[in-house]
Length: 66
Image (tube, rainbow, N blue to C red):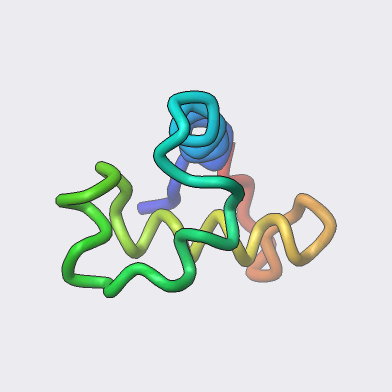
């Protein structure tokens, strides 16, 4: 199942707005077993979102994540 990249992006923007993180890169240093507990973001979804953004807002596997 694909991640909803728009939903993940909005969650990250919300975390930044709340002051819980400074930017998306702050999530990289969070241990994967704590990511969901601390921020409510699934590791799989964050990986899919990162791949989506780093490939020019397209999925490198040819799927449409939105």
